[in-house]
Length: 255
Picture 1 (cartoon, rainbow, N blue to C red):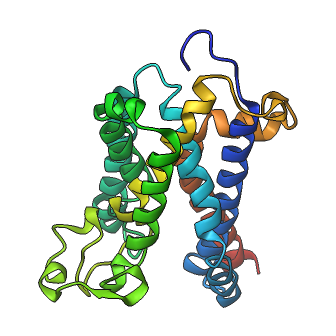
Picture 2 (tube, rainbow, N blue to C red; picture 1 turned 180 degrees about the vertical axis):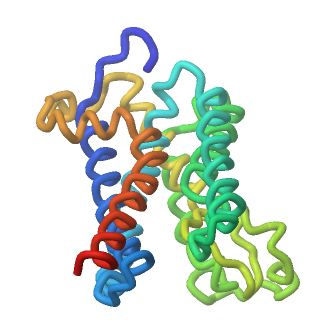
């Protein structure tokens, strides 16, 4: 955070909460994927109904924090390359050792990294734009493009041309064909608009104009998770995989 900025503990706690929800969600997927229990997949699929909520919270908060960062562009490159490293591990290294089906192409870190870079480049314009106008524009763009993966805009009022979906080269933007699969996928459209929505809210955070309750500490645990969100995201799956494979080994030889 920039010097002199008062810590908004509520942001840390909400981001920590979103990450805890994500870890729980991924745990049930791993139970199905590694331990082959169908109930793991069933709970995972049920929780998918709520996934947009906790990821939406996470992305908005990341946008807010882009107004508080010392160097949004630099941090964006760090996060983007962390996402690229995850793609290399899941799509290249893991299949080499027999683990397939968990490939990640343009996951949440890739999306957040590019969103930070884009926001940082356009920060002078964002700072000059009226906050409520910017929030309104971002809301309209997010809602209008939310169904882009279904080849429609405005919830079906506009049908997008099929040629946009003949290749996967534009999957970072939200256009992909039927062969595309990714265990974690957040295209720039529409999620960049949600990030920018948070960036406009960040004006109030930068000015210290959040409600007083936002500056009050409530949960040290969630704050810790929220402050170390990048490391939590990078390390949680290797840890979950290790736990699941140990359980699988115990079941194979001792049960």
